[in-house]
Length: 435
Ligand code: NAD
Image (tube, rainbow, N blue to C red; front, top):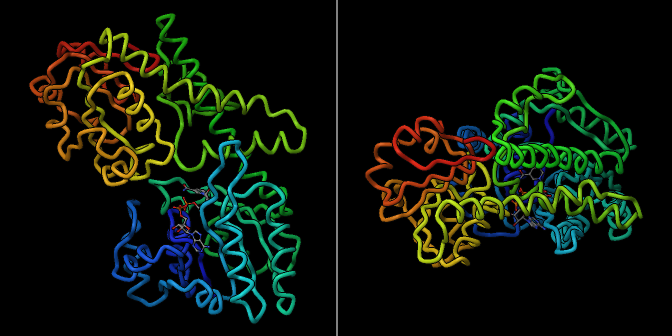
């Protein structure tokens, strides 16, 4: 059965879900308060970089299952199932800023003249979906609203694959009608064996935070082990490989680097700590993850300082600004933070990124020099620092680096190069947790 679905928020999550749900045969309208994004989509331009999305986007627009609308109230009127995929950034104290969500809820109340299923896809603190249900019933008592908490687990850079091959679908609602509609909407995934987890609002909301916090903890754990490897002369890749062979640990998320970033892990770990405080429950483990992750960026800068003596007056080439490879997203990117720290220590910074230069310009402005070509970026630089694990850096031509770079220092904060090869070419190479 096909549904008329409205998606609020044309972001990394909203657009990917909209495109995916349209591909399942539903009629989807994506709406956003950002008129520019809507106009771009109407013209067939995806407003951000997400590999593989274009093909699905074009096909579903062409086959008229996917449309875009600037007027959110009108879009809501047309849908029977409304997915809310608006941003939920965190405030300084970790509390989630739900202002976008409440604005969406008000629009839903205004735009509804028949019954609606409202799906909260945004990551929201425990208790929010219940508050959404209460608010909708109060704001528009004439209409039946059935609320579902349906957190999203896709990864930027692999979002399309993840949408079509999720590890699980979490459906938080005690409403039987809403459960059935959700089961029907995700039926194509159920058919390929995706496990469904049915639970109440609170459990669904907490699953999302617990999931992200665990992954953030795993990254932080291997970063600290890597730092110890540096101190004692061990190789973190071998340690990670060996411990990953233990089925209770598993091999994923054991890659050391400059710490986690992006629009989810940092804010979700902070919000989990905030929730702990709110309910008087000890979240010191995750609090330490937040603190250790911030320290990791500093450790990278200190390594660079040690390699160069001092950063004052030096020119540094930073390769990679996105918070990870295969995305143009620079939100809470460790690379951006590291560049800022290097600037504060009196260095000039040349930057390169294959996709994120535009977004980086919004946050770094004219404090750095931007390059479209990575070898050009290295010219007259004293050191090269790899900050994002893009494939183009893995495949870097060390002979070309040799002739472009003025100095001999390579700090590989993502461990993407072969240390032996770099040393053979005469570089003073350092990675994270291996030499
Ligand atoms: P985003 O910032 O890329 O997109 C959010 C969009 O919502 C923006 O375009 C914004 O203009 C729009 N918006 C804000 N208020 C609106 C309103 N009232 N009506 C319509 N549109 C509105 O955000 P994102 O990265 O897609 O994340 C969305 C949510 O999903 C967040 O809660 C996030 O934590 C969660 N999430 C994100 C990811 C990810 O990898 N990005 C993964 C899983 C979950």
